[in-house]
Amino acid sequence: MPVPGDDDNERLTPTIPPPPMIELPSGARTRRVIAVGGGRGGVGKTLLTVNLGVYFAQLGREVVVCDTDPFGSNLHGVLGLETPPLVTSEALEEGKAKPVGTIVPGLRLLPTAYDPMTATPIRPSRGSHWARQIEKLDVDYVLLNLGASTTASTLDLFLQADVGICVTAPEPLAIETTYRFCRALYLRVLRRALTKERFKLRLVERVIAALPPLAPPPAIVAEIKRYDDGVAKVAAEEMLRVAAHLVVGQTRLRSDLDLGMSMSVIAERFLGISLDYLGHIEHDDAVWLTVRRRQPLLIDSPTSKSARNIERVARRILALLAAQSTRGGSLPPRSPAAQQRAAALPATLYEVLGVPRTAADDEIRRAVKRQREIFREGSLPLCSVVAPDVLRQVQARIEEAHDTLLDPVRRRAYDLSTFPDDTPATVVPQRSANAAQMAELAMMQAELAREINAETQFSGALLRKVRESQGIEIAEIAQRTKINVAHLNAIENESFGELPALVYVQGFVQQVAKHLKLDPAQVAKTYTRRLRDLSHGRARGSG
Image (cartoon, rainbow, N blue to C red; front, side, top):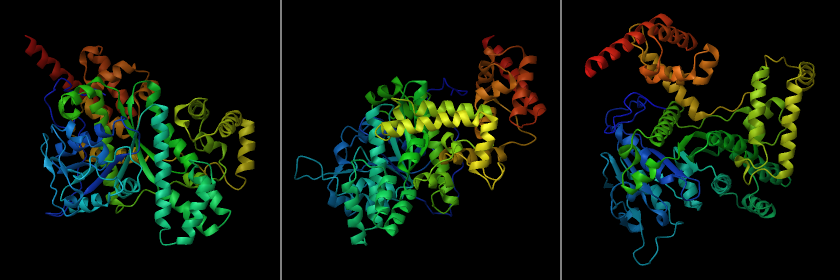
């Protein structure tokens, strides 16, 4: 999304304004740990880890990044270091390893543990030293590049982090690996919960061994329930505790942009696991060019599309961390619909489409189209999760929902039979909220409440920020106001050469302000004044 100042390639500060940081007592420091892993190699975990570190450092924070998988340590290559800093695991455990500086002020790299007596790095299973070392770091953010490992120590680091991020790519193998990582997280959480219950743990292990490979967590819970209701209850509760966040890298096609949300739907519905979508990173030549130059993307090419994508992900992470602070570090509660799906209870036709009972026909049609795309034959989000017979059942339910809910007579009969004691206004099943997006919107709205007043001078960037804070797309405004999408983009980007005469622009801005629930007179007056001033300034400069 372009913003004013795109031609300023020397700028090293974030292009998206950062949210206000949490105020701490004098001298206090809250260390936040962010773990990046969950996918096969080459999907962009290192790219994301390094550039998140750069973004936080550009906010004036102290940041440390580290490779916790010694077999794939490569952060040094993107941070301007010729060779990776190495220490023995004993030195790391004793706290003798100190983070080394990089080309980015405020961003340091923790040395990778290495066994000097062998030709290979230390075993990944010896990873407990990372947790102890992290506790000793007096910094604001610690970013862990977990690599493609699914060892117990890697899973523990992911689960203990404030934010755990899975990175995938729009290809079958990467998606399958991400789902496998989610299954591994659940099994690790369940085993840790039953560590002191030896006989219960043995029961779980026997059940898992008897099930087909890669059995989904709901199937594990159902099978345990056949033997012990108490253990099954624990297994179901632990399933609700598993929460990860998702970033889709290397997106090329428009359909790739929907992959993250689709994977979130599949993970919650069939794995019983919350996979909160943070955003995507576009396939961009700027990425491999910066790698060859041994520079982080946000420094070497801060105005590239992929850099903007990473900044959006970083902003959402900050919003999540701020939301966690207000809740005392607890995870957001799972929705009742999510708990029902995790418990393998049957869904209503509204839940099949992910719409409320009050949904209008056009909303139902859009939902049907979206569900048909997700559950079509060969759909990427289904990789390794949905069996062919189950897929046919889901497709039949989608068509049943379409035929029933778009027929007024059949819909009324269905509502009366399904909800006999409720009216449509009292029971409204909602789609599970995207926690990252909701946290980001809440933070943006809080910022705007302080920023907008009777003296505010509205610019294109501010109008965009107001629109994004309300979760409104450009296409929606175009549909409601009948203003061309190109003109709306030109207004937000302040591309005045692409706009019509001033009198038309004034009318367009008033319509946009009404849709965003702003004062139309104030917005139109201040925006057109800005347009005149900038136009006159450019005219004088060219003269």
